[in-house]
Length: 357
Image (tube, rainbow, N blue to C red; front, side, top):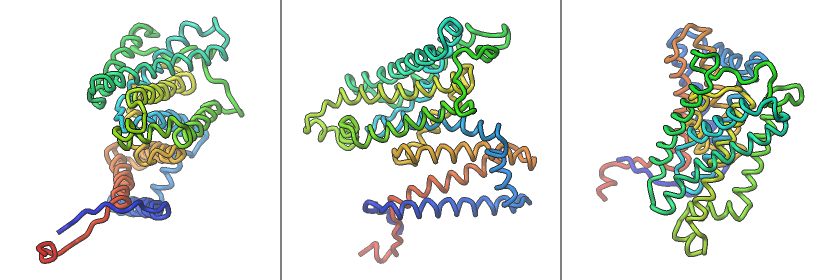
């Protein structure tokens, strides 16, 4: 008989050792599959690294794809720590991105770019915050299911984005907005330290440190933890659960909306329904794996983007189809996610006689 028993709070060293063992096991398992396919595992791993960081352009693309994912993970983590299951990050990043693109199109060239950037950041934060407050208000007042509500809000955001893309279509008939102000770069992030992604990195590091302090050391962070542990305990302690719920989702949505601002003004300089690119759902994995540690989220986001870029490279280099490269990525993620089970639970094997006793 198999009995699954929850462990006592594991030590940090044991957690780290288990995760490292999972990574080694994942690499070993994928190496066996590669050998079965007639490939040299070491050569494949080298090409994965090359695909993610082999050239300046590839490295920049890896950073640009990582930054929105980190920010979305930060937004998700705030809500999830309170046990408010915000599945609406996809919609929140789109709403932030749409309003940023709109301001960039209509005010680029008429307002100085530094002022325009501040304005776009403010409206994207506001739009994302509103998108988060709506389901939070319904949850606080009428105890609606936030999972379904936030998921439905995603589809509303997708339709709004589709409408705006059709409205702003350029060139006509392309079904895209095109790169906004490609020649003049009005509303684009300026280069810092000679890199286009310099300001992106500064923003994400500032936000990461700020959210770490907010969640760990602020009164609001304490209230989020208490509400997440037990709403009844929170009420007994004099904490307004409704107020904390709405406020926290305003912050969660605002952060995800800010990711839309960065995706448009700092990375792609356009808007479409693929701007989110599924990262709102991937951010859930990142937040859970990081156990809401904001600094660990950066490492996990980098790993996931690295695997994605590496999979594309080996598919091209070795003539594999997308399914084969995705299987390799999936196996690595399976082992990493599976390690979370063995960190928190212990499997005890007992004979039938022992079970009968």
